[in-house]
Length: 480
Ligand SMILES: Nc1ncnc2c1ncn2[C@@H]1O[C@H](COP(=O)(O)OP(=O)(O)OP(=O)(O)O)[C@@H](O)[C@H]1O
Ligand SMILES: O=P(O)(O)OC[C@H]1O[C@H](OP(=O)(O)OP(=O)(O)O)[C@H](O)[C@@H]1O
Ligand SMILES: O=C(O)c1cccnc1
Image (cartoon, rainbow, N blue to C red; front, side, top):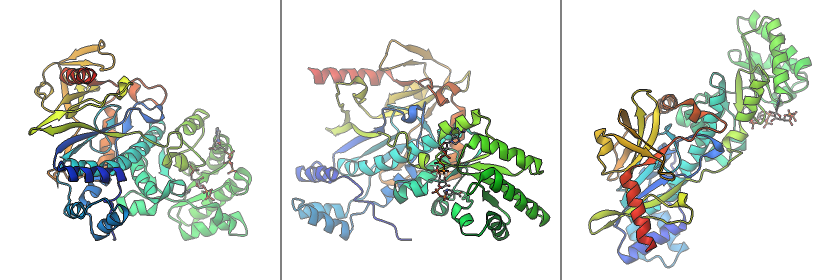
């Protein structure tokens, strides 16, 4: 398979900064960047971290080959030849720590950290944000849907409405991580091993003289997985009646009708009526699939109306994250090398929540040993020992520091795991089913108050006293 060179999947300003560092002789300065987001999407109580596999693939593929070099030479005559020669040998040689895909993550905590020569750390910002922002957004949307239909079969149908091809396949993967059962996209199935499922379209019915004939022909062709779309002409008077006839014909051949699909009209009413008709025909095992612009709110509503739907096909609103089409993850410089040591740096803002937290940090999920539940995430400078030693921790909200409590019986799970060290991948990426299982286990760690769809309780993200003090000191220094 031809692999596409993604090295120039970056903003020009990154190359400009790389050039300026090269000119100034500072390209080898070591820096640390952390990625985080400030606001949860969809009013949800958590986000589902995704995109790391794509980041890993991208990092491995960084190469300025003849084509990239020629393009840069042509695009920007200010770039000196020596710089272009430097790029020719550029490989990623830094460290990347990241949360595993499927982890529940929260605002204002580092999800991924790059420590590298500034030359490399700057190059990779754009692609990392692109991959992680999109995939985390879709995984979070999918997780909301899964939360309200935990026992139903969830099918991802979005490709035709996705924002182009990459979004379709990586969105399908993100949905699967968060609990979807299958995708309709065959390429996503082939690339990632996601189960694929498909029914048939209205075109199949329309391309026959009668609906019944179309159902019979379809069932003849694919007798082991027949799902019939029943709404082309009249769902209850024609579609379901014909589906029942075909189910009986299948039974006579030792086969069975798997399901019917509803794709328009009042899905609550039609599913209830269809259920009665199927049950009365002795077909209680025939399932009902619904589709038509669904999302978590509609599905929730349909369930409240007593809809008899076993499986949901969700396309447009999932794959485009229709109610919030972007996650605002950012990549901020937190430390730089000075006289051989890494020193913290800060970005001040008029908005207190936007002031960056300086220094290289780790995040620990603090599990209360009495309850087995996550109590808070605790952000500490990497050199801090308290949490590593299991010493009592003061948990306090950095925006409202007077709200605090001490916890002593806890387990601290470090969220950021090494992925690359000195340019070498040090951890094998889990396979997709492991990621999916891990995501399910993650949910078990949280109280339902943080997981509910509407007005969830904020999960505390706390700063260590040392990290907090350092931030205050730096704010003070820049103010004076
Ligand atoms: N019982 C229900 N309660 C709330 N919303 C519903 C219900 N049934 C269906 N919907 C949703 O209402 C929206 C409109 O559906 P409807 O079938 O009326 O229009 P449509 O999609 O234009 O139909 P058609 O495909 O026949 O043109 C869809 O998003 C559908 O999922
Ligand atoms: O509604 P979504 O959540 O986006 O799910 C995907 C939609 O795509 C198909 O419709 P389309 O009209 O494209 O084709 P069809 O003729 O097969 O219904 C399908 O019937 C769903 O309604
Ligand atoms: O299999 C289906 O029913 C399907 C697939 C993609 C989009 N809409 C429906």
